[in-house]
Length: 278
View 1 (cartoon, rainbow, N blue to C red):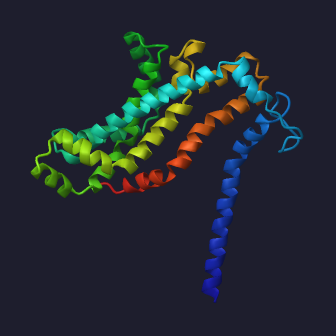
View 2 (view 1 turned 135 degrees about the horizontal axis):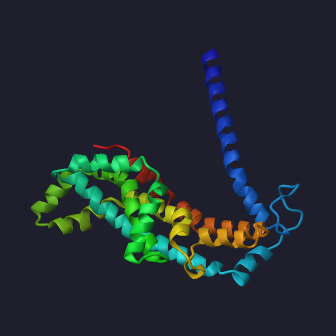
View 3 (view 1 turned 135 degrees about the vertical axis):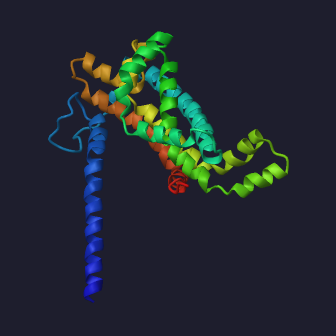
């Protein structure tokens, strides 16, 4: 009886801690959502739920700002970065997982060390390099940076997934006359759908909400992404349009949230499938 009571108490305490942590995590997001419907331009309020609701801030985003253009710029950069980044990730992780070559262990160690340093440490070097290449204030500069960074960040997860695929499938395909490219595109990629979903979502989400590199590289308002555009909108107006900013932040979260909900099953499968590394 005592053992059962202790187990129940531990379980109840665990649920209580999870509920408290969830409330702490959700409160800022809910505050932004409620503020986007509030009358006025200040985030300060004596009530959590506004006394009066309005859609004026959402209409102002599309009528009085360049929010639609910022959204299209962000979608373009995120989509291209996801495509190129995922392709680079597939090639690099498959080669590291399946082939034994000189410098393989050194490559893995280098990639591991690179993950220990935050990306913004390389901002000055990247800025100088892009300036030399004439790519400043270009969306292709962001795509180049995001794609290469995505490969470094997710290579161990992808490699771990490829390690779990039996080599007997490749041997059988080679016996049937499949080339390396046919084997890669017809067998390995279809089997990697859970991992591809996870990697693609992580890359897309990181590119969609990034601010630091986008603010460093993009110079004109026509080229700005959502994060940079919203920040500049508030700073240029002397920080008086916080509810307008809140409405923009809510709309930023919608595409990523819908993708996560739609692909949640594949996301969990991809995350757990790459957990075992050979």
